Length: 360
Image 1 (tube, one colour):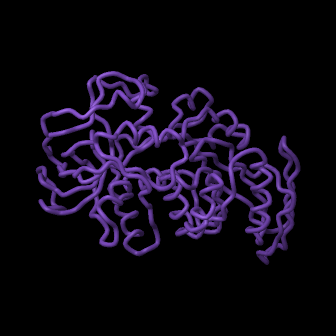
Image 2 (image 1 turned 60 degrees about the horizontal axis):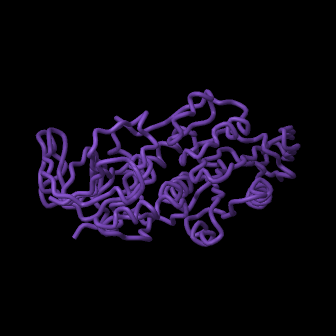
Image 3 (image 1 turned 180 degrees about the horizontal axis):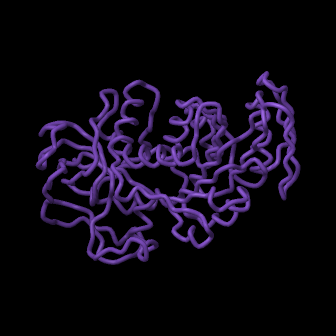
């Protein structure tokens, strides 16, 4: 079969399409004839050798973790799918004509198989991050990097849970972020002031911003937390925040809120902002990264999906897609031979929705 592999670490040009033996499903696994593979930011970092110390590879190696396709082999013990079913899921070396999946779910009836190829990692990552952050109904959540795959999913999962979401994205993605159910604002200088303004506008109950999720890693999200009952006064290094509320009435107004209300910070991009996030939260135990493996050096945590059963998250995401409450659009498609171009597009950090590699 044809598959994308690389024999040395380097730029996008090290990816090449070669002929290799097709893999086979072992017990508890399935194999699919791949129709499309999702492209994730982690993959170009692996290819570039940025994760050699934490995720060493024996080269040459294949690449890719997400795929959607038609089941053509079922391993021993698998009872929930049959040959011929359309599924999406997670596995290894999915940039190929055939791939083995270890977690999967049926393609929702209202999604194409190409769209479903981009579901697995955003669904599992977004749900894991929101669960670890404790996002729940009534929270106001800042999601920094709301237009990418994980950010788009996180916005919609959070909204579905009853949270108010402020989504940080580039200027050209503001309408898109709003369409997901978030109140959009932009990156860049003055981000904290913009979040203050947005929070005072959307948070009429005075509950402030409870959770910060950093997806893009291109800036620092500031969480603004003000008590909705009684009077809260918080002094952060960047200023003073005051929240006024009528006890028990649920009525309050956030005024000149500073960064002292940051409860949790989550880094997804691994762009070297761990120290800043710790400064914002005031406690390294409240900072989690899924991409910066130096986080423990600062006392923060690293969260990964390695070794986890992703099936519950995939099924939950598929359920929301089927109900019309979640969408994750594909905005760029590449062929196997264009895998390097797909990685280059992913590495820009300005992706809206998902990038996929299609396999005819």
